[in-house]
Length: 102
Image 1 (cartoon, rainbow, N blue to C red):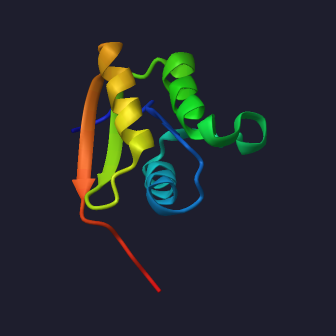
Image 2: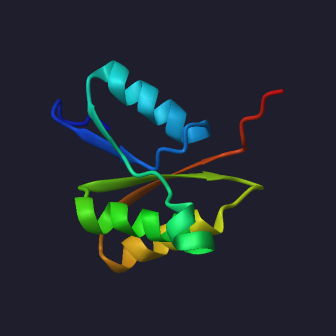
């Protein structure tokens, strides 16, 4: 999939894992990057789901790219896929078997 040169990549600002990889690759390609950190203090346990919905509702992306680790499925990722499906967004789900380091 080729994205336009003026693409803005929006991600959750996790600082590790997929967020870190997406941020670095996007910047190296020359895309603009916008981050949405999780507001744990404000929203508590619901913070990640609320943040994910805010990214969709505020930014109205052309596509969503979700990363789902097989064997470590995230309920939050599944919830955002369901949420975006209900809003008729085009979604690509990338599944992988996990990345680990010591």
